[in-house]
Image (cartoon, one colour):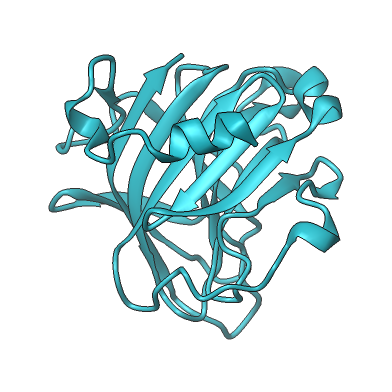
Length: 207
């Protein structure tokens, strides 16, 4: 807990801190490629916009580079009928673009579970049931600011400056010590959507 408190009092204007780099160049999707699904991704203004495709499974726009220990910040806004997430330290089955994306995912949703950690195709919820306290930190129809710190088996998350998850998961760290960052567009069923999710100010600092 002491490490969590130390990080909590760190400066919030992280983009000005040494070592942060932009993951999105603001112009095109250079440095990213899509894995799984048929959702679409486009650049609109200063944001990456993911749009659902009816009947598609989960889709992921993934960094070409892999990351191990890092601090990641971004803003996100999602349609109220859609849930999403950001993959961290994730892998593709068989290390192929068409291979099933798997690994830790930080939840983006309006079901009061935003910011907790899910194992996408990797065992389900990583944040224990007892620790997933419903909350209203994620705001509908607004940009929400996320901060994620991954260091060793520890994954910590904040939304809009509020600490959400402080998780140590040795098993998932052994299986996924590093990997790509992925922007998820969740699959939807027939007759649903289209829905969109938007990300901006994607910045990372390796630690």
